[in-house]
Image 1 (tube, helix red, strand yellow):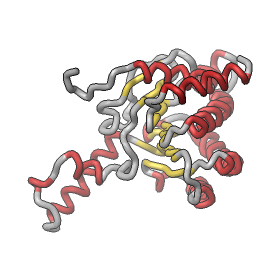
Image 2 (cartoon, helix red, strand yellow):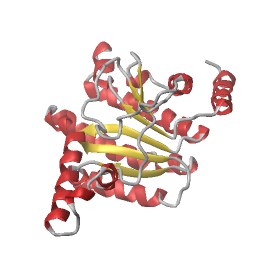
Image 3 (cartoon, one colour):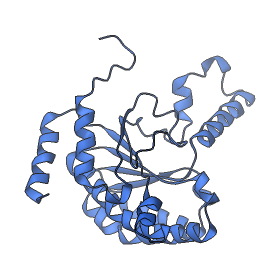
Length: 249
């Protein structure tokens, strides 16, 4: 596709209005992308770097406020040790090398999940990159790292129980707002649009509470092949939907 055609699509999306405030992405298919090409699985993760860059840039350009990427789940720790080690080294490299580009796009960075479980050098680089981007005012990029939606809910309920035990909270006061204040995403609005690549029809333990009313878009495209045009197609589909949140028209 010519750059002029891509720009025209972008302008049409913005002109249509009703852009999602928060887009969440389950980036699936890296391993299959590599396997189909006779490459080691880690090659698929390296190829996916372009997709992440394009989606971050596109969201920043059109005015999406939040982009959450399912980067590494708690289940991913069960993969072969060599793959996990390669992923951690690659994550550290990307956080360091993409910092300048994110800064030029006015992107802020944060992370949710069991970040303490990451290797020390990855945590250090994550924090360094986060600090370097903390003064930006544009897109909020949220990386879900060592993340589990079930674990997030367990942690939330434990904190609520501790407050009840300490006499700081009456059980009768526990409502949806109280739960949301104790989620990892307490300062982030719920996603409006969830994109899942590779055609799989499941949530994979991702943002189980937050996705209650998200519009879901599934594409057969594997994540390393996903780019700006694919994102624009997903947002265009989102703009056509009537979000009633359970209400009657």
